[in-house]
Image (cartoon, rainbow over all chains, first blue to last red; front, side, top):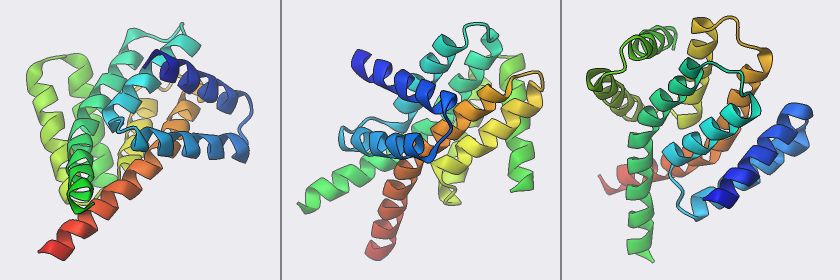
Length: 92
Length: 92
């Protein structure tokens, strides 16, 4: 997870520096890899939270907390997706 | 979508005021409703972005932009989930 955290943060930093299509394309490729590795959407939001708070250390604690709310929102999406992945596996 | 935006923001504000289990439970119930209504995870992040920027109008534009990156990350999760929903429908 440590490596993913570093990669995620680097990609987000590049995106913020240079808002071009190329970096969005990398983000999409990256998220495809995440899904293959069965990383849950709530874990992506958690990586995102840590990256944002590292990049902007001056942000108030409340901004970190907004991410916790989004993590909670994503938990059911994660469950629905895992159900999907287990259906796919049963068919294989 | 306007109503959802308002509801989402109210729920997030309550959560930030009072970080208790009850509000997390409401968030979970809310996300279940979202999935039933086939609202994509990238749309949830978009609602979240607008709510955060309304609640903290002093935040820099870069913080809004970090959400755009997360929206991009969620697009493939949304695709995987829609595939799941169409599989379920075929079985019914």
